[in-house]
Length: 265
Image 1 (spheres, rainbow, N blue to C red):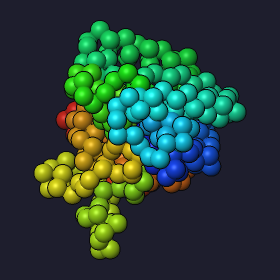
Image 2: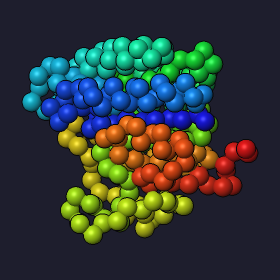
Image 3: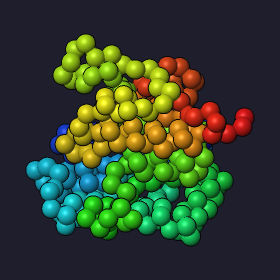
Image 4: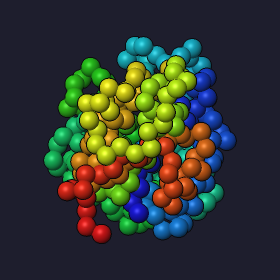
C-alpha cells in the first residue's frame, strides 16, 4: 500500500516541547519495518514549532508571528536531524519537503511537488513533509498558508493517490462526545460519510503545542474519502498500532472512501 502517516506535535513531544525520544524511536522503527515489508510510506510530521519552543527554552507556544517562525526554523533542524539519524539506523534515506499553500494552489508547482515525491518513492526514499512555517503565516491568506497538518496530510494523500491516510493523535478516534469530559462517550469505529451530525461531534483544538483538533481531522477525512482514500484516526501513544492498521484490524475510527470514487483494484 501507499500510506500517508501524519503525526501530531502531541505525539512527538512532551508537554515541555522537548522530544519524546522513546515514542519517536518507536515511530521510526515501525515505519522502517513497514517499508521493509514493501509499503510506500510518506510521513507528514508536525513538531517544528514545538521542538523550537523546547530548544529555545520558551515558556510555551509563541503568540507573535516572528517568534513562531523563529521557533519553526530552529525546530525544523532538530526534527529532521532526529529523523535522519533514526531512519539511518534502519538503512532508510529520508527526504525533506516543506510546502506552502502556493505550492498546492499553483498548478505548475503542485505538479513539480508530485513529480518530486513520486521520484523519491521510486528511489526508495521516505519523504517527510511539513508546512514551511518559517516563511508562511496565517495572516498571509489561504493561498499562501495551509494552516495545520491534518489538512496538509489530506492534500498529500490526494496528490499521491494514497491507499490509506493515518492520523496519529493524542485521542483514540472520534467519539460520540468528548471523552475527557463525558465518561459515557463511546468510540465510533467506522464512519461511512462525514455528515452534519458527525461534524457536530467535533470539539475544540488539541494540545497547547499543536494547532489541530477534531474539526480539522473531519475536514481531512472529507477531503481524503472524496478522492477514494480511507482515513483512520488512531492514538499515537504507541506508534506500533500502525502494524494493526496495516493488517486491517479495527483500530481507532476508520472513515470509508466514497465507493463511486474508489480506485479500481
